[in-house]
Amino acid sequence: MVGYFEDVRSRPVLAQVEPGSIRRSLPASAPERGEPLDALLDDFERLVLPGITHWNHPRFFAYFGISSSALGILAELLIATLNVNGMLWRTSPAATEVEEVATDWLRQAIGLPAGFSGVINDTASTSTLYALTAAREAIPGLNVREQGVDGRRLRYYTSAEAHSSVEKAGLVLGTGQAGCVRIATDAEFRMRPDELESAIASDRAAGLIPFAVVPTVGTTSTTSIDPVPQIAEIARREGLWLHVDAAYGGAAAVLPSHRQVLAGCEQADSIVVNPHKWLFTPIDCSVLFCRREDVLRRAFSIVPDYLSNPEGESVRNLMDFGTSLGRRFRGLKLWFVLRAFGLERARAVLAGHLEMAQRLREWVAADPDYEVLAPVPFSTVVFRH
Ligand SMILES: *Cc1c(COP(=O)(O)O)cnc(C)c1O
Image (tube, rainbow, N blue to C red):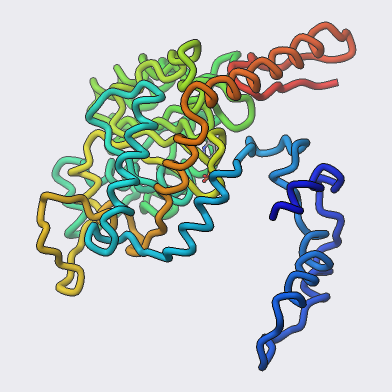
């Protein structure tokens, strides 16, 4: 691991392999007899590393990945060493409570009010699916938990620029893709509140059931920021669950200068922020903050005898907030990273990223052969020749 980081700079960022070549270079079946570590490490170097796209490379700039940090990697080693399953508080009290502390530190660091509680999921796709499941559970009179649902009349709203995970949730929720209504955006790629209002109105007129709206803070293609305060007002008036996808952009709110990117989010029912995107935490670590945890729990909690626990309501059992029972001790790496960096250094590093993006934007804007195509609120610059 140390050696890798010492020479990662000398490697090409992109894997240099053809489809199937790695698979063909490996035996088709597991060995009958165990092999020595040396042989494994040799093959790791010889066969696996050439097939790696180096996300921890200093010149890796794709997919918002800046991920890792030394202490995050060390925490992963400790997580694997302990090998705990934090499904219940009592199956490892520290796994639950460190996750509670670390996510609450993050909540404060990005300026969300008390009342939001965090759970860590693998990805933002999962966090958004769970949030929308809670939103569906909250629909009055449907009784989805007990009776299931024919989702064909349900509608939720997101912008034309929203991440595919928002639409994908509909494949699981029973709404289908038709249930995920894409709202048009303005010239700066932000959801248009007037279009949202008229879509809700015409859906209601057609006898459909609007139940949630998902604005994005930092969209995937241009990192645009939807007008959450206005959308929150519409959601409140219409009785819709407000879930904010801040998987990437939320981290910027650690900076006082960027606090306003989460304006309006204090009114959200749920928000997702991915520390594995922009807060130095190794994949996977996606925090779902929820202000109506009772609804999230109602959507997911089933407690058979073998998982019953005498602590009752005095503890949170993290199995209650999603579909998976078992869960890794992910809170440890977030806790390590936040402590090792400290908010001061985290802010300095993020400010550096933002500053680099502004410099690139200026260079591009100054060159007559190039055109900047979108505002640059974060660390992504969209341009063309
Ligand atoms: C990256 C991203 C996602 C998906 O993240 P995963 O954790 O890979 O599921 C969703 N929404 C936004 C805005 C993103 O940037």
